[in-house]
Figure 1 (cartoon, rainbow, N blue to C red):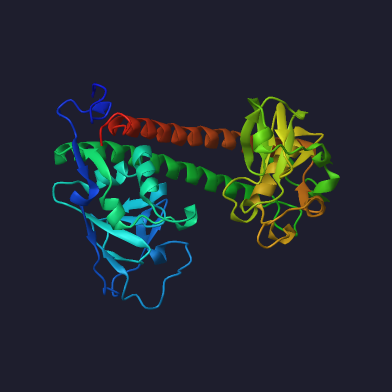
Figure 2 (cartoon, rainbow, N blue to C red):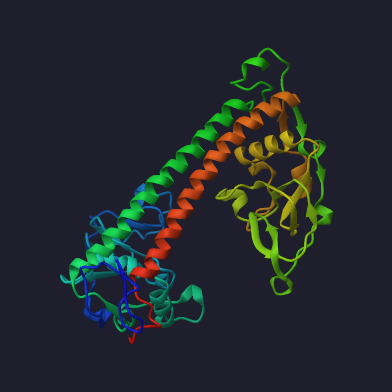
Length: 400
């Protein structure tokens, strides 16, 4: 790759075999709007973040489709499908299968001179997302629509040679394949840890785990104690700060699911365990609901703060809370909440301190491997983001 000159409608990074400026054109000259209906015998497709456009029955999404699918749109391999109300968030996908989608989507057919995979990546760049947002119509963000006529009016620059389009698409696709492979490894590690914990902790109603380290076999059963009896609660020390009143700094400002900002002051300066107090994540469990914090921190009123006399006990409780179903301890319908009273009565199984240490050390080793794998995925995603910024032109530098 070589560096290109500024103020030309070309990207900063370019494969050496391609020269010349990128072409100025409108999307309406590159794509045709597919509006074929009446194919209700084809599978219903759903747009997912993880797998792209796949049959609805293969997803965990609720099927909100209507019984009458006569007005549903046909999609074919090679089409680009975008969510008409979410294109300003980059909600589009290159279609690899034939099917139908609801009228909430717009289906675009790239002309023969255009590579759909290339444009699918292009449509997720910051500059184009800004253009999609500017051309979407609606009173509030939840009702913004990018109809095809507005989409077609948007001016862009792109390489006229399909070989260059494919080269860029292949480069980014290769990174995506690597990200996908490393992400699968991460999920496998997380699944392994979960399965191991289910063996190392007693099942509900029991005091002995299925697996036990040799030196503890035949020892006493685990004690079951309410969480409030094995830690000190520091909730009264929490102080929320509105965003406008925060002074930027290097100290983590902690919320229900972890760090949400960095400020210039702290409340705590020790090892503590935070547990989510409210929020949809208490049900969805997309992120850990229990997480340790260290050193200088500031915690708002959306996370409980717990202090343990023994670090190993804290590690055991953290792992256990992230493993079990807490539905019976939650209150609230629209906004799930784990209040102080319910938190205090969660039963926690605990072995003697030496066994706690052994289990804690075992899980910490796995956590280290998981963290390393997670960082590898993050680094690959950051590398892809940087490549996309280089492989596609900045609209501030191109006259379009």
